[in-house]
Amino acid sequence: MEESFTNLPTSHFVGSVPAVVSEEKKATNNEVPGANLQIFPPNNAGSGGQGYQPIGSTSDGGGQPATNNWTGVFSISSYTQYFNVDTDIVLNRLISSLYPTTGDFVNKIDANPDLYGLVWISTTLVFAIASLGNCATYLMHRRSDHSTSWTFDVNYLNVAAGSIYGYALIVPLGYYFVLQYLGSSVSLIRFWCLWGYSLFIFILTSFLLVIPVEFLRWTIILIAGAASASFVGLNLRSYIQSNDLTIVAISAFVLQMGLSIFIKMWFFA
Image 1: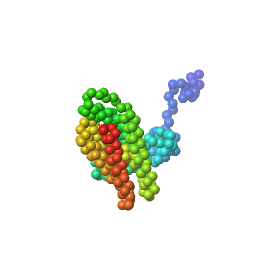
Image 2: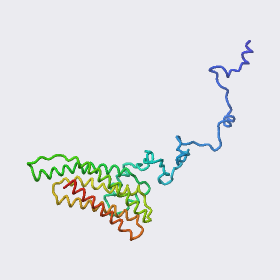
Image 3: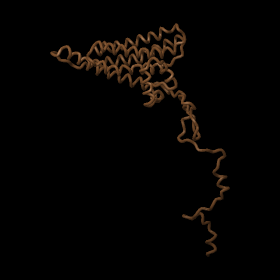
Image 4: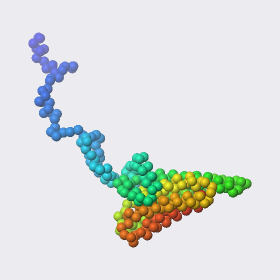
């Protein structure tokens, strides 16, 4: 009886210890020649990605933007590539817009133009000139006439939204089509980025325009307008190959000055 039990295959019992597999056999069953660790999860190779990558490999090799991920006008994922900026990049571009004489802004945004500045700066400027414009009107009213009452003008917000958003979107679009027609290689996204950051100086200026001194207001707005117009004109000049198209940069300068005068006349009169 004891001899019959000893002949049973004990490896099939519950709790039994499995047979030891030799190192040579284990290597034969499990090893794959040339195998290495992979990054998980993989990139979407079907949408322009690079699939699985070995650990330590680089994706683009230079920080250049990835392939175009445009999937349609009504797809949110199509626009995420134009908001791929962090705080340091945005601050650097905001500071560059305050130094218009360099004219190298287009070189800074060449690899990664963004629409974050256009949306954020335009929206902030709309609320800034609408609210501070009412405050400036109130101070001027109190300074000239104390007897009559003053009310908040909500139309300032409507006019500000229509004028600022319209200017920031339509004017770059117009110059894009003009330069394309004249044979220059231009980018609409870069134009929107350029004009968007050119409006940043007006946000700072709107706080100074609250001062109820008319001569000082005109001085401030003309200086800010000249700085913003120079920023646009000098950077637009880099897209112009011949001197015959200099009028295009001059017209952009004039339009930017016209916007500054409009802000002063309508909101801080």
